Image 1: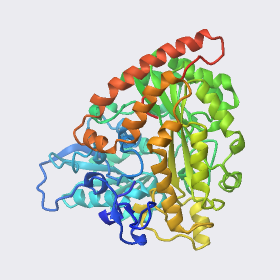
Image 2: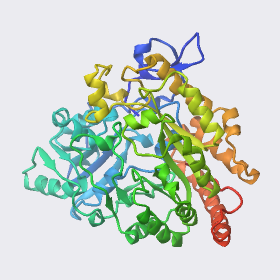
Image 3: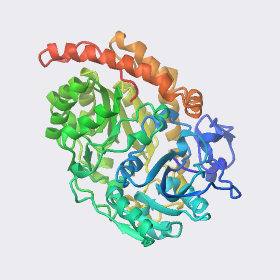
Image 4: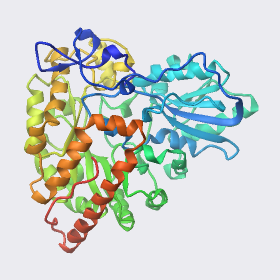
Length: 528
C-alpha cells in the first residue's frame, strides 16, 4: 500500500515468468493495474476553494497505491476506524465530514472550505498525506496530522502540519478543536492509552458512505495484543498500548445499531483473553449476524471456545502464522504453538465451519529460496481458503528496523515502498530479486485455477459458494476496479452476504443440536 509513482508498478521480465517489482530491478513489461489504483488523484494548485466555514472539520484517509498481486476487494472490505473513532469525540457545535480517497471518488472537497483538516498518516502514504496538508494549508486551513507514522517520525511530520496528535486521537481531538476556536492551537498534543477503553464513544458510522464498503461494521472490542513481535507496528518505540477491553454490552449494542449482516473485528488479536472472547460470543449470539476476526492460532487450545465462536456467527479468521520455520518465530519473539502442530489446529477451525485466511511473512533470516514452494504447498495441503503474503518490512521504530539498520541491511528509506509488497532490505539467504519474485509467485500460484481447486472444501455442498467467493473476491480485480469506482460494492456484495448468513444460521442450529460435536458440512463466509 503506497503512493508510489507509475514506474513502481510491478513488471514482468521478458526472460522469466517470475514477477518482480521495484524500480531498482530495471525496466520490465507493465503488469495490469488501473491508474486510479496506482496513482493518487491530482491536487490542482490553482483550484478555487469555496467559502471558509467556521467550526467545520474534514477528516481524510489518504490514497495509497494498491498491490496488483493481492485482491482489490480487501481495500473496501471495511472503513478505517481511526477517523470514525476520532470523529465520535467531535463537539456537537462542529460540523464534520469524512473522505476516503481509496473509494476512488477523486481528491477531497474544497467547497465549503474547512477550518480544520485532520489527516491520518501511515508511513506508506505519508508523502500523499503531506501533499494533502500543503494543499489545504495554502488556503489557510489548520491541518492536524495523527497516526502511527507521526509517533515514529514526529520531526518529519511537524514540517507539514499546524499540529501533531501523538497518541490516542479520541482523547486529543476535543482539546485540539477547542484550541482552534480560542486561537491557541499548540504544535504538539500528546495522549496515552491509559484510560479505560470502555469510556470511548462508539465510532461515527453515520459519516460513512455505506454503499462504498462491503460492510461498515468494522469494530474493535479489545486493544493491544499479548504478543510483541519484533516486526509488528505494536512494538514501535514509544507506543505503549496496554491490553484494554470494552464491555460486551457496548460491542453488541454498537453492532445492533449499525444493522449490518456481517461484521469484521479489526482487533490485533481478539483472542488474547479467551475468557473475554467466550463472553463476547455469548453476547453476539442474539444478533444472528456473521463475523470474522484476527486471532492467533492458539485460540484452538480449547476446541470448546472455537465451537462457541461458530455458534456466535464466526465464519472466518485471519491467522498470523507468519512462518512455518520455528527459528524465524523465535527470532521475531512471537509466542505461538509449534508450526508442526499448525495443521491439526487448522482442522479444528475447519471442523467448526470457520474459514482460515493465513498470513505469512516472507524474507526472515532463516528463509531460503525454497520457502515459497514449501509455504504454498502447506497452504494447499491444509486447504486454507485464502492466504495473505507479506514481505518482511522493517517499520521505523521497531526492533526489526534497529536490527537491520545496525547490520547496514536497510536498502533505502522511501516510505512509499515500505508496504510489505516491495523488498526494502538485504535478505540473509537469498537475493532481493529472488525474494521479490518469490512473493509475487506465491500470489500467482494461490489465485490460479489449479490452486483454488486444490483448496476446495472437503464437503461437496460447500464447494459452489467457496468457488464463487474465490473467483469473485480473489481473482476478479477488474470487477473490483469498477465496483469501487462506481460505488457498487454494497449493491453487489450484500445479497451474497445475506445468503451466507442464512446458510450459517442453519449450520449453527445443527451445531447446537449436536451436543458439542462439529456439525456435518462446511460453511463458507462472505469474504475472509
